[in-house]
Image (cartoon, rainbow, N blue to C red; front, side, top):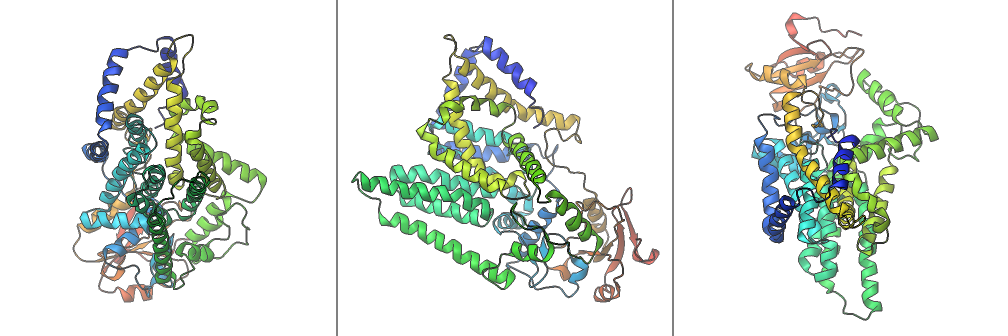
Length: 555
């Protein structure tokens, strides 16, 4: 939501500075009404879940469900298709050299390199009619889970405020809702963990221990490294809690609580080993590690070695791995400084922006606030984890989002109490921030209607021409084999060669034309199919019947 520029925020805050109680009667009525709703905790959770779904469905005529665009999305969708077929993997295809694509393992099994949690959600959606249904449900569940989490930390009204920020900033227009590789699933797991901690200390219920264990399981199968960094402080705070109880000679919690958590952790480890074994034939080798070993000559961590360039079977892999990937980080201090500043800015603009940064003016009070001291330390751990990896997208920080929300809500509470010369400046500022943040929903919708390609609010690009080719082929009877020919200046971020789980029974199969590699085995294997030649880099992209062109590489 890039309309949140500093000057807009400054204007609203300036008005609230001089007239902090402007519209006080109206604001008070709205706050009382929402407080009454928030007080009904379970009903409010269900209401927020349904509200997220309804709002997104209502704007489908304006912003349709997304088409996959980036490499990662296709990889997740492949694994979702495999799950929807009732399997964990498919065997290697005999023609796999022609299907080779990004972030997919073809040996020893045909499978995605990514953890399974996101793919499970997409598979659920696929079984319901469209993988995006899984995204819709998981993102709505995230908003509801955040509300449940914050209810364990704050009074109901403040919990509702924090969950509303997630709904407005992430659950409608961001790529977490409008793509297939967002962070909703991982953030959902973190919300379960962070919401269970204060409840365990307060009520010591078995239900909360199981929810904590479930959250850890989700994190381990969505963002393993970031989830591990997120969970380290959780384990420490629980141990410290036990130590304090013993020191104060108070009754210790029932052993069943910790047995339940340990059982969930054990199940997480066993499932991870089993999943690795099925996909890589080795319980200790992760699918992503296997892929990185085969294709990456740079480490995903900033301290890793930069190895000599590898050789690849096609020009697109050469350009991507030896060009784009290696250009991200060269192992120098200058490169390190650059990528760290870029990720800090990306984190700030995506999760906070100008408006939601204002409450952190209360930072001097926050650092002395015992209520959120644990959250501050946990956020520091999450930040250290994020700073240690080379690449960054906002969904990498999904676990840390939940900790940030706890800190943000408490910052709002401190800001709300701020007065200047007897004037309740904090009341005016918090009302201005919340009002403008919520107003971004209709503003972004109107902006998209007026300028659908501007991407001012919508963090996703729908102009993807591969989907148009698919629609064209689906109107033609029979089965199809599409040979993709790229130009030498092809944009390697726009890959066309992706297939479903059961390649041989797919209606449309995509294969790569590789310079110097004979296509005869591929054509003989699929001799009963109609063969096409696609040229994605033409303007517009071209699709020719195979019989009308000479199938030779144009390099």
